Each structure stands twice: as C-alpha cells, then as structure tokens.
Image 1 (cartoon, helix red, strand yellow):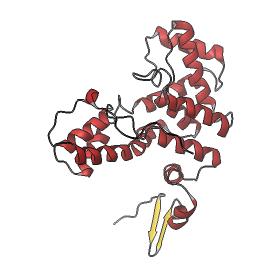
Image 2: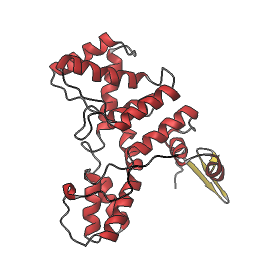
Image 3: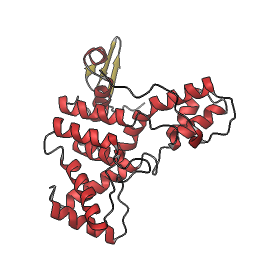
Image 4: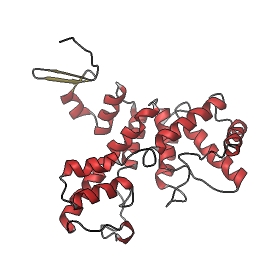
Length: 257
C-alpha cells in the first residue's frame, strides 16, 4: 500500500508522541485543555493562551436542559439508547443554529477587522455596523434568549484583559464596539453572548473558523454525559420531556474557596 503522512500522533512500541511530545510528559505536565490546544494547533499554549483556552472549554460545559443537544440526548436516553448513541444524538444536533453561531461570529468579526484595517477604531466599526444594519444583517454572537448580560462573556473579557496582549485582544475589542454601536444606532442593547466572545477569543488564538463547532462539541460532551446519567437514574423510560417543567434541585449557589 502507498504511504501517506500524518503530523498528529506517532505510535511505536512503548512510545506515544502527540505532536512530538511523549504522552506521559503531557499527562504529568499539562492540563487536558492544554493537550486539546496542542493536538488542534500543533504547539502547546503559552500561559495566557492556556488560561483563556481553558476558560473557553469550561464556558460551554453545560447550559441546562433547554439546548437542543441536551434535549436530543435526553430523548435518546429515554428510549433506552446506550451512552454512545445518546451523546451522539446530542452532538449531531450541534449545527448552524446551535453552536454554529461561534463560527458565524468569527467570520463576521474577520469581516469587521478587514473593514477597519485591523484596528479597533470606533468610527470604522460604526460605519461597518451601519452598513450591516442597512443590509438587515443579523449579527451572530450578539443577544441572548435568557441573558441580558451573559456572565460567561463578562468573565472571559476580564480574563482577556488580564492574560492576552493587545494584538490577541483585537477581535474582543471589535466585538464589544459592535455591541456599543448597535445600541447607539438602534437604541437596543444586544450584548456579546458566549458564542460571540468565544469566536473573538478563538480568532485571537489564531484558530480557523471551521474548527469552532468542534471546540464547542469538546466542551459540551461532559454535560451531555451528566444528563444521560441523571436521566437514566432518575426518570422513567419513554417519557414526554417538557424542558420548561424541569426544576433544579441540586446544590445551592456556592463559591470556590
């Protein structure tokens, strides 16, 4: 058979190299999020990139029982599907309108950055927003059906200001200016949501838009597994699932010490 090339992982007797690093060294010296960054980008993140990428993965860990991916997992679980099938059902529901806003936001921010000459210039962002509003464009990554100020976006913006330099913050700055200029022009606040902020951060970390849904999937899988386990343990099979009737009975709000 003809040879073909791969740069991801090398497997030899008693040796596993991921992007050149021995797996046992990664096990000892890196976090899981750093290893994910490595396998996707080819190099380990610096300290700032590590902190931000870990926050990105944590931010989409779960969002209750209302997202389509969770409902799909719950419905599959209720029919008696095994773990892999139930979680796969959830993953298969992550598409253009669920999770896909990250990729769309990245493309929009890239267009905005091109229009501003790669700067967070307020006047140029204002012109970009006016042009898009005239086209009746719907800005991906802004607004939320639940949150008027998405706590995940607020925290990630604070982390960005602490851990990333100005060049890597460019798309976050542009996203926030777009939010401000839309409010000025329309008198309506559309806050940068978690999808928009993740998109801005991924661009700052030099990830391509086409990988965005994959990163969202990595983040969401643990939550889907948790919902599978809870559904299997606490609910009857073949039930009619009404997300609005769910009542949270877990731990009360608490802080990490």
